[in-house]
Image (cartoon, rainbow, N blue to C red; front, side, top):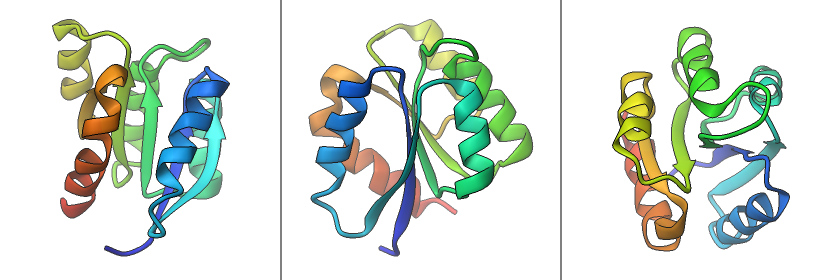
Length: 124
């Protein structure tokens, strides 16, 4: 697997820290940056040009689903995995319809994050 630049987007600092600690075990992944809301995600995406964004559905300001729409319109090449505490079909469907590559429930993240990332990155 080639090196992958990742942007972590979540309004919860301790969750971002947890994600970073998981990802540091993988030398092919580099945390390019972090964002606390959708507006920062858009700004940092333009600046950092990440390969992958791990993004929370519920963020203040511009939420994850609205940010996803804007990213797909302006930067469709970026892989995006939506993360949420909500195991709701409505959120899952909205994420899928708006172009998310995956939707993961945060409580299941330990078991499913790495397989999801590897699968998403294999897609062209």
